[in-house]
Image 1 (cartoon, rainbow, N blue to C red):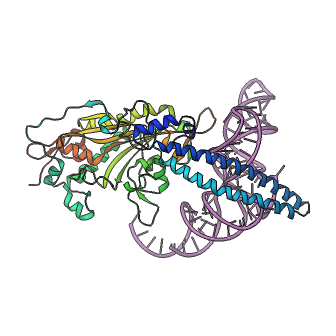
Image 2 (spheres, rainbow, N blue to C red):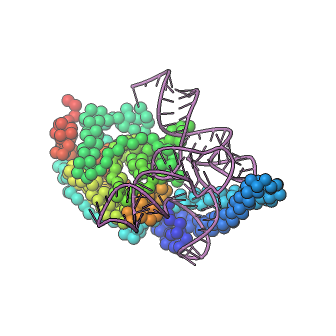
Image 3 (cartoon, rainbow, N blue to C red):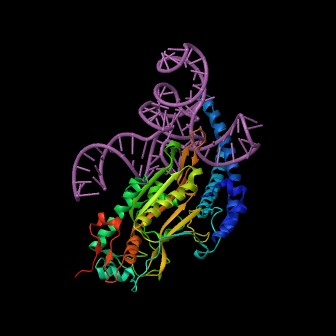
Amino acid sequence: MLARELLRQDPDRVRQALTDRGAEAALVDRWGDLDADRRRFLVEVEQLQHQRNEASRAIGQAKRAGEDASEAIAAVGQVKQQIEALEAQLATTDEELRQVELALPNLPVAEVPVGADEAANRLERQVGEPPRFDFTPQAHWDLGPSLGILDFERGAKLAGARFTAYLGLGARLERALIQFMLDIHLDEHGYTEVLPPFLVASDSLVGTGQLPKFAEDLFRIADHDLYLIPTAEVPLTNLHREEILEESALPLRYTAYTPCFRAEAGSHGRDVRGLIRQHQFNKVELVHLVHPERSAEALETLTGHAETILQRLELPYRLVTLSTGDMGFSACRTYDIEVWLPGQDAYREISSCSNCGDFQARRAGIRFRPAEGGKPRFVHTLNGSGLAVGRTLIAILENYQQADGSVVVPEALRPYLRTDRIVAPG
RNA sequence: GGAGAGGUGACCGAGUGGUUGAAGGUGCACGCCUGGAAAGCGUGUGUGGGGGCAACUCUACCGAGGGUUCGAAUCCCUCCCUCUCCGCCA
């Protein structure tokens, strides 16, 4: 949610930001109308309420004094009706205003390159060298089944397209990666581990920005106000929804392993093969709640934490800043980490690290009381994958594959997997 | 799922229709007292939304949402959550 002061005082800036994002700038004008209406109704209602309160007080006094108050009661009746009528208008306006506010995306910060899509993303750095093969590297959708560790057909039998069964060392590798990632974030980066619910109520999804606009991307439980989480960002960020924290409690850093569930509406035909785009995938998530003046540096820190995992696994990657047109709804700035996938001869997203500023904090009501006292202020929230586990598994298979079709296990992972090589069943 | 009890401010806790935004206490802040501290005394101490936009002022909020009433924390309805017992289950 954007600050109302900002929308009132600098609507042009908001309009420009929406245009840069490819969003509907006219929403700002709609907002302005509704806001003006709302304030008009509000002033009027409150004046009438004041009248009524005064009158009721007088009635109370009269009655206690044993006087007849029927005349005064009749007189207030009129005010009461006016209030009811106006309150109805106010409620309608309020609700429309809220809907508009919930539909407005966050504003990109100045550092974000302006552009319509990923073509405008800015390359920040490239780390590690793509491996050279003296054979044609396979894609994981060939490697996985031939190693007997990924079973796409049986996954589809169980649940349909975009579901996969991991078998044997595949399952074990996925689990090892989760453990490996969590250990680093806990022991070296100082996060608090959380095992949250994998289902959340709609309030939480509104808090982080998935609802009301992106309902079609979510799986909803029939007959309940419950959704499968699309990312642990939702439960982790909402942990402190509607709370006022002490400033001394900041920054808060949470990490969680969770499965993530996405309906992938509108992505028919994209990444239909392999593990890249699934309805269910595993992810280790990083979330920060920080003082508003610290969020820019926190984004660098958080992104660094995600990068650490790739560095330890010795996987080549690059870091890009998403353009205005490519950024997510709640973010004011986003880095994508893209890992090199030899089987596809391309860098593919493996982590997305965003600073959401106070956008989610406003929606979710996450505030802190300044140490020096005074009004509560909104925290800034950040989130990032550290990392997407399935895609990390893909990267290992494709980058560490050998001419004979086996896969060497990265050094750092061997204590977890207790083998140094994944070989096709004899 | 069934039965019962309960949800009040940072916390404890009073309050069943009329200056109650809410007694009292604790905590916290400031002041007095003290050589210093404790104790004691005094004052202050919620959040949101409006208007002036400074002092100030109005309004809403006692789990949430409706209703009754001139007036509701207090009465009625629905829902949510917590606790206890039963059932069921991992």
